[in-house]
Length: 554
Image: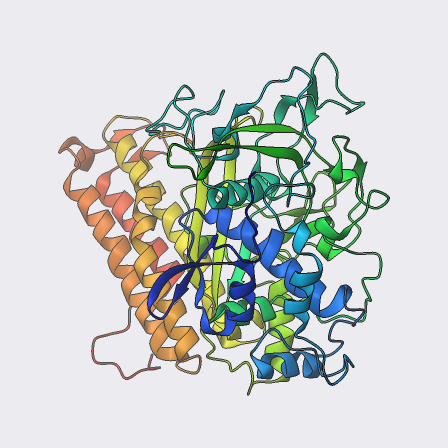
């Protein structure tokens, strides 16, 4: 009665040179070289669509399911890049003279696994039932929708008025739920031996909820996918996506779940962190709509494998002495936390870069004709901040940055300038905070604690965002023009920080000039605070370059 075929029905919003369109999975992959990228308003759904469907379908169709190895060297990868079209067998494969395109053939072969409804619905369990027989509003699949304890501040709906989703909207929300769902109690599934009192407890968030996602983007959807092809001698024989694995490899076709290790990249990308079933019904106009859903516990990873996970930076935990994912910070632009993204070399003090960026650095080093140093790479950064035992979504952290390829090489002057810019911006923030604290003390007040109040430097640092993006963009377009770009940064940084200080100094009351004695050694006056502040600026940025000094002059 209800049908929606993801291989032929339009459900993927994409951006073309003529504007937005919605296309099927087959069109998205076969025409990827003509498409600029995915065009979803929800960054959670955009990342989930890429990780859970687009990338694993491409990798499985061309390599793993086809019995063909991944490229072993950057030279072999360059052959894929030069071909541009995705639906073409790798040069080292031998499909025969009359073979159909690998993606086209793959979608024909597994068409029954790319249905929204039926016996093998994608990312769902067809027979899933809650122990109590109840269903939930479809809003439980949408992080920004009011549902249960999750009450967004500016939601236009309440749980009593859940949204009505089309099949296309519902399957995109389902994919995002596998990646980002909240933790805590889930409905017990009928047939799940782990159910207690009709519930399943101890559920972690979706696997992407604990990391800061860093997703490189190319000029086209095809180039974005090719940038994610692993260059490795590993065969991936035991690896497979969720839709192609049988019950012996994946119990995700049934209500039961297990805690187990990740078997490979495709297994990781299509991880079924929940058991879900969409409940279709006929809408007033006869179209299929989804208002209700069954959502229960899913598989749990024994650990997130840093040797496989491609989309997060890593750092060494001081407590556990193990590698842990780097998470994005609420209220902080991505450029301020980008040094771990650039840490492609071993023993970098800032951590280790996402694996995909390390691969891109190696590819660019090998073939600068195919992947030139001024290639306009961008990175989409996405994270979620949870609250109340990770049972609610408090904030989304999203940014899009230009990424100079030269900055992926720690020995380059581009990397050194980016590193200096990030560290100097933070030093200037702290110096400006100290100025604000000293002015408050001079006026008879007290310092603001680091986590409370409107601190002068924390407010000022946001003014760096436009110039930091301009610096990154210039380093991307003209990586050899280091001196002029550095001068731009130093001049703008000095102007911004002095402007912020001038406003604060102009606003202080007269008594700050007399000052306040805190002890025999601590006397706070506005003039002394300003002198210390200006000395700090000179220490961080150096002496200002006199007007008219030639580029690179002292």
